[in-house]
Amino acid sequence: MGNYSKILVAFDGSQSSRNALAQTLAGFEHGWIKVVVVVPSYDGDLELIGVSDLEALLRGPADELADAAREITLADAGRVNIEVVKGEAYEKIVDLAVRENCTLTVMGRRGLHRVERMLMGSVTEKVIVHSPTDVLVIPRNASVSWDNILVATDGSEYSRAALDKALLFARETGGRLQAVSVVDIYPETYADAPEVVAKMEEKALTALEDTRRKAGAEGIVISTQLLHGDPGEEISKMAAGGRAGILFVGNRGRTGLKKIFLGSVAQKVIGLSACPVFVSQTAS
Image (cartoon, rainbow, N blue to C red):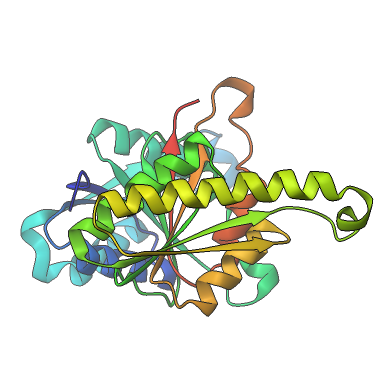
């Protein structure tokens, strides 16, 4: 589908990674899929822990995970390749995606409760921060659907890149598109600085109008909505209320010391959204 003909799926045997793999097979029916199982490495003194062959000890469970992935992909074995690698999980996932020229990395997301969802997992966050590929994060019990696509926009370069990806999928699948822009203000701002509110609303409305114009030029039906409040929470609420099948957000690529944290809005959206979140990467 589109430019996503080579996809990397991280697999650790958890319910979330099993679902992520199954949803990738169903949602990208014609893509080539690489499944990676990462074995933690140990460089310490083996004599101190009393294990003569730690690598073999770690390899056993990894081989079991690879077998579990094969069971899930059995019907699609011709387009799936499974590889077990050793090292730091996020580094190996990112490195393998680059080595195999993948354009999308798929990760599962654990957590049922709000606090658990907010802590989306260090491996997932690090992959998003460091990977040059787009990243699709799929909650444990979610399904990927292209019928109703939601994209968040604020008029920035990276949200426009997310829109381009959303339009690509809407065009190819025939799904309808929703766009949302959120004015991030405190309630007291309305009274204390109404001119600030007006400028922020104008910027958001301009972003939505540009989105509507771009979708219309491609013959894609789109609806737009302007919201006020915390962007991460409001976008997630709209995704749930509008029954979005997938949510597109942009993420500015980072280099050097900036490659530490994922932006707070993207992090919140990924943690709170019940639907899959497609993170479009844009180099800074």
